[in-house]
Image: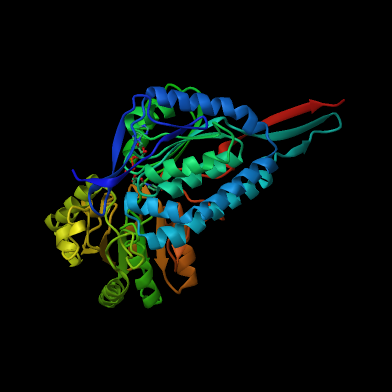
Amino acid sequence: MIIAKDLKKFLNIINGNLVPASTGEYMDSIDPATGHVWGTIPCSTIQDAEEAVESAKAAFEKWSTMPASERAVYLRKIGDLITQHGEELSELETRDNGWVVRETKYGLIPSLASFWYDAAAGATEVGSKGNTVQLGPSGVGYTLREPLGVVVGILPWNAPLSTFTFKAAVALAAGNTVIIKPSELGSVSSLRFGELINEILPPGTLNVISGIGRDVGDILVSHQDVSKISVTGSGQTAKAIAQSTASNPKPMILELGGKSPNIVFADADLDKAAQGVTNGIFSGNAGQLCAAGSRILIQKPIYDEMIIKMKEVIAQTIKLGDPLNPESSMGPIANSTQYEKICAYIELGKDEGGETIIGGRYGGSVLLPEQPQFSDGYWVEPTLIHVNSNTLRICQEEIFGPVATVIPFDTEEEALAIANESSLGLVAGVWTTNLSRAHRMMRKLESGTVWVNTYFRIGPELPFGGTKGSGFGSDSILEYTREKTCYIDIG
Ligand code: NAD
């Protein structure tokens, strides 16, 4: 394994201190563009997890009893801090998981700042307000909104800074203290962001520790002093967490995978639809988004025309290359395990009878032959596979990469049946100019979000969560509070 000369070392944040793992052990962080080690992160242990919980528990009294308006001041400062350190944070995210810098710098960072500002506003508007109820002449009742205690956020590798923000901003706004456990395959930006936040928040209010999920993650989620868990990850991890918390059940938010349909009807604005479905899968982080539109359904009369238009969009707008170069619009796969998995699915598609209509190649030396520094990196070409059946494994299993199946259909009923024929239900896209059809589809599609004539609209204004195997709950201030009922007899 080649190791970068400027190897960077990152530390945990526990109780206001920057600390290595208690054993002093580190894990490698690999730059997916080159396949070379560029940083190290702490390989935390049970002892580190225990210390993080202890520290968050000790900080809870002060943070939870602080007036919400004061907590809001802290959260606004974090929003400012993201912008001030936007360049550094976006480059860390890009270097560590390959998401192109032109999206991390200009799209991600401003949007994350808005989540912190929105959480600050919600701290006073939503997080601390209960209801009063008249109970006749001799009684009054009211509810108190209370924080839950120590909250653990478990992050995936594909979108570390976003998932960190979605969980921590609202949990802190509601008065909880927080432990963030980033993925062992993408911890760098979270450790650095935690270090920056640590300069603002009281010690112990926010802790960040890296480590292996089944070890340190498992200790955190099953800990008796942890009151709520929010997990973004795979269904397999959700099952493991449900099992390890079975003897000490606690509320959880599960934000899991997707196999989302993006449906184009013949009455759609085809130029807009071609742009939308293409961008819905060939994102700046190479389709490694839970909400990726990985099943593209096209009505038969416009099928050939749409394929031509999508090929044009890909040729004109997708530039695979160095994620740190602002000209690149799509980067590498974030890690070697995921790369191997995607390549295997491309081969499976051929075995299952799929016809590769665009792309299908992989490997740094194949795709970027003139840039030898990327020959060991994890590169996959934007790939579209035509299929005639939605029951194939490549249509049913989450590939999580720049690979979509394209399925022709005849009628609206058939499109709905294909779209809903999935164990997952995260998002769906519909492209149509028929308003009645749009409303019918929004009601009948089995997914947490339906986008019509747009895709990837995610923001603090509306909730984002899944149904079916894509999970339940969504990160919002109310989900991180409980409502206490109070009765007073005044007779
Ligand atoms: P993963 O399930 O492998 O890991 C997620 C996290 O869980 C990691 O931090 C890991 O260390 C931890 N973990 C693993 N085993 C654990 C255990 N037993 N106890 C506690 N923690 C444990 O998922 P991933 O590969 O990192 O992420 C990709 C998945 O996340 C995809 O399925 C993707 O669709 C999904 N995702 C969903 C959303 C959403 O909002 N719905 C957003 C992003 C990603």
